[in-house]
Image 1 (cartoon, helix red, strand yellow):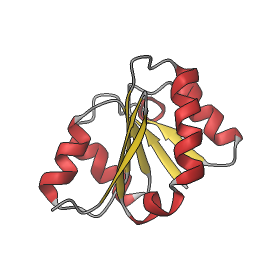
Image 2: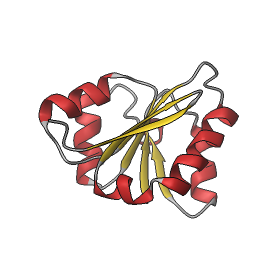
Image 3: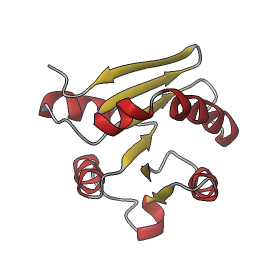
Image 4: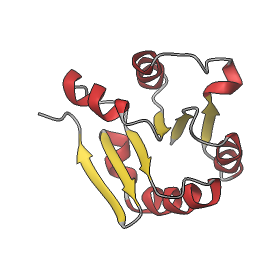
Length: 121
């Protein structure tokens, strides 16, 4: 799997994903920290990457566009520290790889996560 981390995600989380064998980049690496959300989705789709974010706009944009990709993992946690995000991310990746590959929005909350397959109708 390939990942694109939005600005709310720690660059150290990206480093951790890379050490685990994933292809992961952070927007800040390419000096793209000011990229608009729609452009981030286009980049992720073109590069076949899953977006990691804390920004609710990504789910909305995918819903109104009826897009099938890219997948988005949206963290909506009370504590969005790197360690907590990584713990939930590990759980999602171990349980939802098929959904992420075919297109999904996964909303991660303190009490678990919800999977919505794309496109959203």
